[in-house]
Length: 96
Image (tube, rainbow, N blue to C red; front, side, top):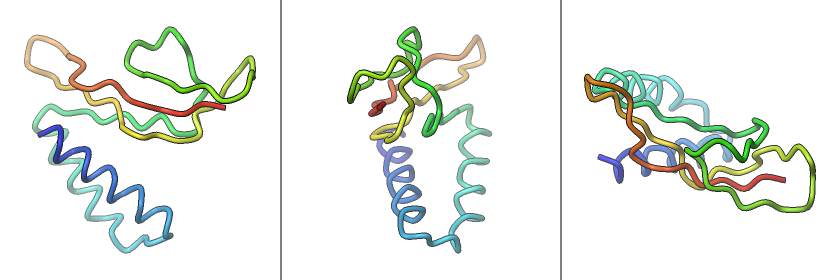
């Protein structure tokens, strides 16, 4: 399932880069179905990077005291298994 989620994430990211908004509704439906299955996909683009966030692995560019996440290579993926939420995949980001 992680491979499928990562592929959906890549397709969604490329469609936004190309400014193709006709798929937005389809992506919303896919995300809704994944949430129904207990998955949560965290895309932290544009947020301030916090080194205490154990769900992310970051490559820091520059020496900013408050780096902002400028690129997400892989999203953080969580799953609610009924007894709690577990981290299935760490997000891989670039922060500047």
